[in-house]
Image (tube, rainbow, N blue to C red; front, side):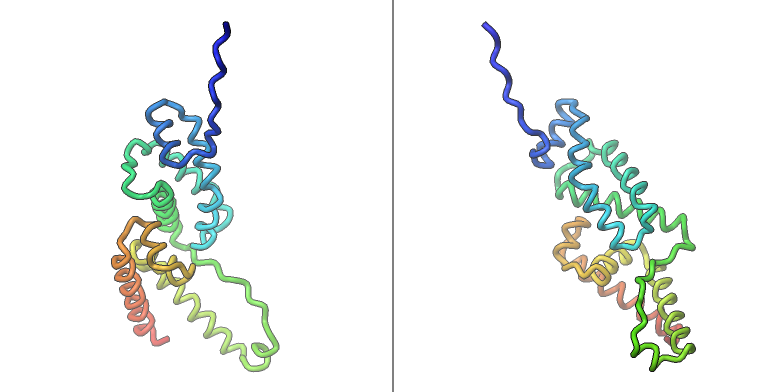
Amino acid sequence: MSQPMPVQIRTQHLSDDALISRILHNQQSHLFSHLMDRYKGPLWGLGKQINIPYVEIDDLIQVSFIKAYQKLHTFRGDSRFSSWLFRIFINECNMWRRKNRKFQLQELPVQPTDDMISHHTPEDVMVQNEQHHYLQDAIEDLPEKYRTVFVMRELEGRKSKEVAKELGLTDSNVKVRFLRSKLMLQDKLATAHL
C-alpha cells in the first residue's frame, strides 16, 4: 500500500515569520527567495524616493538581501521583518552616499511654464538654482539619523507612525528627530542668508 502524498503547502503565501522560522530551523534556505520577491519592489520604491540613482538601486538591494540573509539569525522579531530589512537597506544607502560625497539629490525635471518664462530673469533662475543646490547639500550634511527621518517625513510625505514602524523608533522619537532636522536646516540656511 502506497504512502499518502504529503500536502504541499504553498510556501510563497506563508507569513514573513513562518518563512524565517523554516529558513532558520528547517535549513530551508531556498525560501529566502520568497522574501526577496516580496520586498524587492518596496525596496526599489524606497531607493527611488530617497533619491538614490536608479543605476545603483539594484546593487544596494542585492547587498541588503545578502546582509539580511547572513544576519537572519540575529532577527529577534521585536519589529516586523520589513522594518528590519528597510533599516538594513537605508544603512546601505547611507554608506553609499558617504562613499560618494559628490552625489547630490536628484532634481525633479521642471517644465518651464509661460509664467516662469515671463516673470523670471536669468539671474532669478540662477539664484533659485543656487538656493536649491544649497538646500540639497544641507540635507546631505544632516547627521544620518536626522536625514533619514527628514527625507521620509518631508520629501516622501509619510506619517510619523509609519516612519516609526519602518525605522523601529517610537512615534515621539520620530517627531523629535524631524523637528531637530528642520531646526538644523533652518540654522544652515540662515547662516547662508538664503
